[in-house]
Image 1: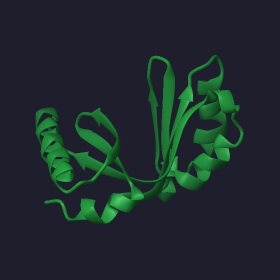
Image 2: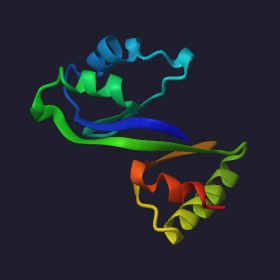
Image 3: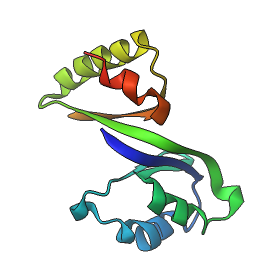
Image 4: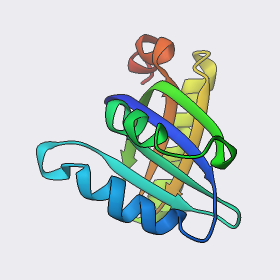
Length: 130
């Protein structure tokens, strides 16, 4: 579980992908343990990264490009060696979180792993899920 990540959703546009790659992604030091995930959808781009770096980047963007921003998230990664097991593991994990009143703010599925985002306040409850 990674701590203090931010979740930023942006409206896609002509130069936004280039800005993410040139201005933001190049500053993230993944070799030092900083995390970066970029998910490109049909009309928006979602960036999940260390909160401080993401807030600095967010400050350089036009407000009309911002769709949503969540601070103080936790990034819980569920990994499996086989894609079918990943789906079953995800079902077990999300059911356990729901039974413990943990609110998920986002789910990204990419076999063989899945990324779950949850609010910082739900971290103690999430750690108790078996």
